[in-house]
Image (cartoon, rainbow, N blue to C red; front, side):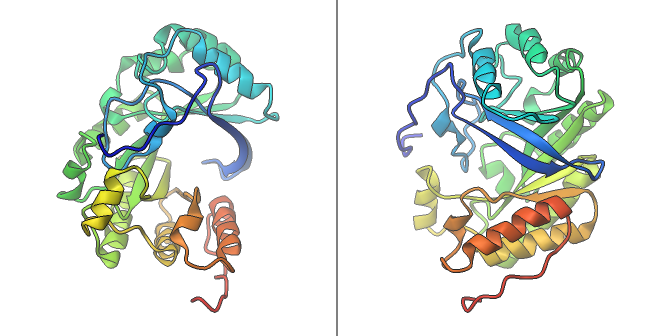
Length: 301
């Protein structure tokens, strides 16, 4: 934490970001999705690779702040059938999302067919069912698995095991809740490209074996302080864009369920300004059609 850059200046009555996007559902239908990135108290788990704390506060989120943020975003977003309430941490951390706001939140999003939030596997429990019961539509929880590498996962300070992820997923499924997993490509402490691809794919396979309906591959980014130090020490290597493309193609080929490639700040992983936009659009389209598309030709490859 001592290596962190400054946090962003935030207004607790406004989300720090909101956007509309398209995403293919488990039914195979592409639907419009409104995503709101809520402003709230920082996650208590200090994962080594995380940079989401940049858009969090140090204080408990006051009652009514989250509903004010949702109202602010929904007034500016188009109609959609799916909503993601992402909060740079854990929706079921009462210090981040007050439980007293659950009822009001459910009323605000009653018009959505499907609701997705993010949460830490350790915070899985009956309170999730309480929130689900308030919803008009179906419900999904996204959780970070990160990697199943037996030596790397403990070093991430995620404070989970692969078995904990499995039992948390099974609990949620028993409650009638869908689960999606976040998996890292090139986590710190694993620096060989071929091993990174292998362990990312093994982690994706494991996630589907636990019962998740979707898996998002996240290229691990520098920029949070400690990751930059690990990079300097040779303990972290950001993934090349070519490696991300290859991993995503192989993950789709598994045909186990929906797989998404995170294209946020994709430019950071490319050395070529000529083809990056086309390659980003290709990955975005692959996210929708869930199949490999022709590669983008460029002199850099």
